[in-house]
Image (cartoon, rainbow, N blue to C red):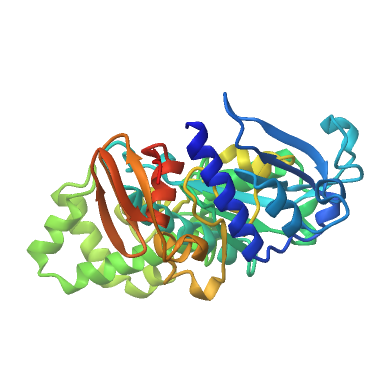
Length: 393
């Protein structure tokens, strides 16, 4: 990025901060603060600041309007002395539980082929899965949801009972959310039942209980059985044989068990027939693959992680790091709702270094190489992402 472009963006970021009220996170004075400047020759991170030292006796808005940083961060961790220069000297008190989803790290996303809008849409689907896991399985009601301003979303959980969790405990939460290391038999409830005629020892009955990965698998099994029973027999047989190692014999057995033991299967009993157990296990594996959330693991396990400040601007896009109310998440469009008002209603001249398409504000702009006039929010985005530089007026 050349000097003209850096100075332009730095100045307009300052204009944005002068027009915007930004609220610090809870316990702001117990957190470490850091920011990245617009310096040339590489990335310069200024960190190990306490909030009071950062703002210098003023408020956060005054600091941001004066310093005009490229990126702004605060720590998930809370400390006795947040401005100490080493982590060991800070005196850790606890940390928010933070989850990060990056669009270009998700399965089935190709950053070279997929557009920015397409990647963010896939990331939003992953976010909804994550929130379902956190709210339904952990009871983390009303977590703070934030669009990162760049490639995805952050989720903050600040309950008192999670602040003191160590890295190992956070790793267990990560494994659960990712569905890592969870075996089918681990989620089943095992019960001894009376033996049948000719068998003196009790037998085992395995069921899928409500809740968690078992409950999700049971709902999928229930939907699958309902689908089977609505199909013609030939179609049902064909559907069953799409599963690995399910031939005509097993398919026939599953279909018969579905008809004769409908209520038992609805209640999660996977032992009505060995073939039903096999199908249930396959559905469990699909459930893990399709309903887990591909979070960035180190962010959650790192109790000292710096995370972006909601309300600040992302220096790699010019978009706002925006907190999203849970009820508004379904309709939230980051490429519309996170466009700062400061950059609207004004045109600027940019030099496009490489042809690119920018989708912002509900419109698509095809930028061709050379100097051209574009809406400022489009120009800021293109410059921040390295596709363009600021042209002379």
